[in-house]
Length: 402
Image (cartoon, rainbow, N blue to C red; front, side, top):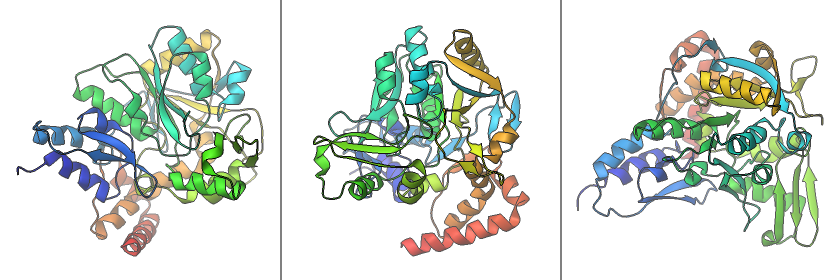
């Protein structure tokens, strides 16, 4: 039997814990589908070889998979040490109060998604939302109306292969995690297509589905999981609360600080701990929380009106943002990114220690993604003590996993 090069290439990424579950690989070969693993993350499943060009499919997989390699986007008008390239930086929110409240941090992505389809700039927007058949799960969706955009509003801290619901040969825009947006751009380039409109958000990592299930069990002990009919991670305020409701009307709720800090954020996949881009550098527009801060500069999570940092990463993104502002879709005012970096400590620290984490994995004889053009080595040299600590810590944790 000939070697199955595609299956081997996929297996190398998954077995090294470098898969992000983006779903991009399912778009390059019909043999690949996505399914939930025993650890609660979306992973590719490769069907037996059907006689297609396995070698060429493997080459395509390695070009587009963010768990295999990730190339930095081209330079832009400006560069920031934490947030990378950008064309313009803003503080903003949706002008529509309903959308602003429904969104996780100001409703900007929900407002832009609605505007893109209503103005015909995109026929649809590929995104993610709560599953209709199982509210505990997060599933790919296509937004074609304001009502659908509102239904998909708010963060989903759970695995979902967003690209599994995207048609790369259409004019559909994409709202997705930074790794998914990078894969979408790579897929378009690989197919010789123009890059779709890409919208992203600041990401701290993808929690396991188990984390959501355990949180539900904590808030509603003894409830049958199949009875869950509504689940909201954030939104309906800023930052908003985790809320779950059953068909019997029983409800459970907790703060964002508790849901993320004590449950969801403690069960992340390994690829996220090795992430070179948590702020959507490959997108046209990327949005994150513009938290209020205490006197020490740490983010505050008290409820308030949603407020976002909005980065136009490309000239196209800048033109879209300013056009949306002229149309009264979003409200923007300029912002200094150094001020944003102070209230986004996770993103700042992640960039500083990434080189050490990658080194720790390599010392444990584990493969890591290949990052080109992100300045990983130069950052590691600039912070030698942090790099060594991160390397030792990652090496220790990796060895302990065996």
